[in-house]
Image (cartoon, rainbow, N blue to C red):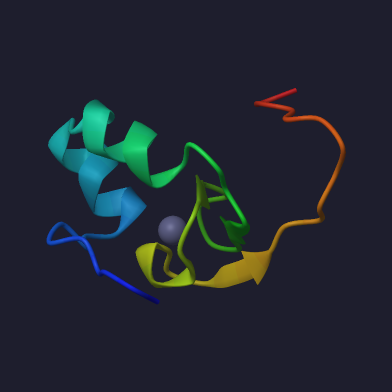
Length: 63
Ligand SMILES: [Zn+2]
């Protein structure tokens, strides 16, 4: 990790706060999914219960 962004709130908190822009930034290249709320995020620490996302060729959104 080179630089840690200042806003390290959990995706679920961002959603509750309506911070859609931050959510978007934290999930523009998701590598983890929350086992609790099923949200996706780039960083495991942004989720309650991070589970690794399967890497796939394409970026599927919410199906
Ligand atoms: Zn969650």
